[in-house]
Image (cartoon, rainbow, N blue to C red; front, side, top):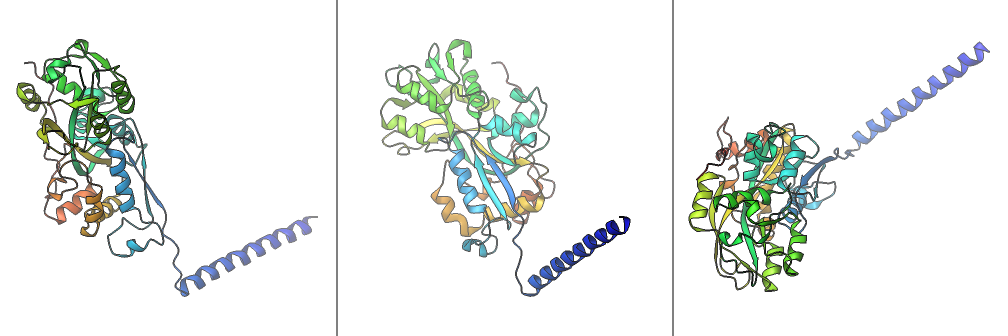
Length: 363
C-alpha cells in the first residue's frame, strides 16, 4: 500500500510539473507574439449628492472623460483618458458632509464637497467636532463655484432673508452642504432655527412641498443653472430672493470661504439678476490614494483635448479653470500638486489659499 501511495504522489507531482511547464510556455509564446495582457482594473468612485443636483452630472462627466477601459479609441492619444485600466464610477449620497466623512474613513475613493464644509472638516469644527479634524482629507481640484439659491413661494410675502422669520423653510438634510451654508446665512441675518419652522427634507421632497403650498421657502446650493430651481421658476410657483445688504456683509466677514456673487439675468428664463453668495465645489480624496493615479487623472482632466466636452457639461462659475484649480481650504493631494507645480500654479510645499474658518463671532 505504501508503494502505491508513493507512486500515486509521484504521478500528481509529475502532472503538476507538466501543467506548470505548459503555462510557462504559453505565457512565453504570448509575449513572443506581441499579445499584451490587459492592464489591471482600477476602480475609483466619486461620491456626489442628490441626482437632481449639480454634483451628480458633473461627476458623470468626469467619469466619462477619465475612464480608460481596454479598446476605447479616444484613449489611444496620450493623456486624453486617465491611467490604463481606470474605471471611474459615480454614486449618489446625502451630500458634502456625508462625502467628507466617507472619504476620511476610507470607505469611498473620492467625492465632491463644498469649500465651507471642507474648511470645517479640516478644523474639526461644526458637524466634525465629534470625530475631530479630517486629517486624511486632500483636494484634487477646485471644480466650480456654486450659488446659494433662496426660493420663496409666490404669495409667501418673502422678499428678503429677514422675511423668513416665522415661515416654513427647507434647510436641506443634516449631512448636506446646503444646511451648513444655510445656517451661516441665517445667523448672519440674526435668525435662528427657532425663529422659523425648519424643514429637513431632501431637495426633491422640499420642491414638492413648495409646489403643494406646504412650505414657504427652500434653500439650495448648486452650480447655476440648477434643474430643480429652473423647474420651480418655470412653473411660476416660486421666485428667487436676494441675499444681500448688511446681512451678506456680516456673512462674508465671518466666512472667508464664501464670496459675493450675482446670478446673472437670463440664467433662469426671464428672471432678473439676483445678488447672492457662492461657495466652491471641491473634488476631494483620501491622502492614501496613489500619487501616480491622481497625477494621471488631473493631467487628463485638464488636457486641452477634453475642453470641448467639459464646456458642454459646464456648471456654475469658473468651471474647471486652471487659475482657480488650487483654491481650497485643505492640502492638495501630492499627485495633483505635482501636476499643478509643473504648470507653475504651486510651489513645492504649497497648500490651499483659503483660510480655515474661525468660530462665528457675535455681532
